[in-house]
Image 1: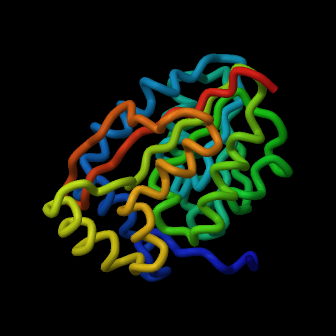
Image 2 (image 1 turned 90 degrees about the horizontal axis):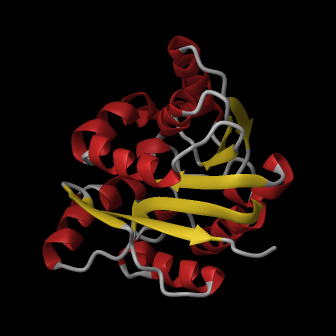
Length: 219
């Protein structure tokens, strides 16, 4: 995969500036981000990697809750990283912004206590879904945990229709359909070694967003 091969926020570069507003209005952002923040539970002294950090909203939330933590935001899109850096500066927090793909995580971030990803893997190719989740796992120190909040299995007809009319309209069918069919759960189970039961499921106007944990008990 070349460094330019990624799906921009909201599917097209010209929509990037509207990303934060769209996520806030269409995905019940406050609810699922609060669930995610509660489960990640950042602590001072930890190193936490935000994979596919986008415009930096969650990375900044992590730093605000745990000012003594080292927060690294990773994303292939230079445009969203500039937006993220501006937001962090306005919030008065220091986050390390790094350009790269999810599969680059071990090389760029090294070992981390926790890794997190939100609304990323539904819009990447199948091989990158597998490589990205595996890379998050590989970055973890023993006892560490990874958290993924994303569109996963869309179980009902209404969920499928909402997902089709919004997410798939913007991001296309080929990369997003495997998530709607449950591939994210299968990838997590194959890496984590146990069933991928969602910690939280949030119904939204764009389909259901599920939150998963992968905990690395051993090296």
